[in-house]
Amino acid sequence: MTIFKQIPTARLADSVTEQLKEAIFQGRYQPGERFPPENRLVEMFGVSRIVVREAIRNLENSGLIQIKRGPTGGAFLLPMNHKSTTLVLRDALTLGRANVSHLMEVRLDVEPLVARMAALKKTEEDIESFSQWLKRSPEFPGHEYLTWNVEFHRLVAKACHNPIYEILVNILMDFTEELLSKIKPPRLAIHDRVSHQAVLERIKESDAQGAGRLYREHLLKIMPLLQKLEGSSHGKLFS
Image (cartoon, rainbow, N blue to C red):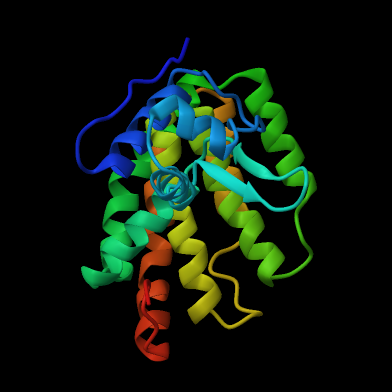
């Protein structure tokens, strides 16, 4: 017995897409699992191969599945993450002419709050993740140093244990890392090594107000340099 409804109306591909999404969100398919083959989906939905292929393409464009070619290929469910949302927002923000100031305004609102939450909700596993992060410190500012610094912000978001804030911060950091890779000279450090560690100490001590205050001070300190780099390089955050 099929779990899907046959669709007699127009916009068939969109309807098939929505039903497949619902099946994914209800856990009927797990990350890494292969979707039913094309001919089986045609039978299940009572539609043409063209409609099924369009629906599968919609899921792929949404970042929900990956298409693999070859004898053992097919459509496979991807783990859920923020990357597909980042891609959609990137296009919208390109049209909106977003810049460094816009990005930092949002970060100043969101990240100090997330740091306060992390100070109150962190776990031993989170503390271990921070410890491993410290051990991976690169020697001098290059791309690895940039990625390492960005990772701190992602770890703080994870430690707040709110999936919506975690996704939002990850999107903000995707944009920040992309911006810096475009406009920052390779050997220029945006900030020192101790600012993040000062925030981390407050988080470890469960000092929510201190963590939020230091986080905000840190962002305010780097904001003028980011604006200067953007202006001098004529760089755009989204282009």
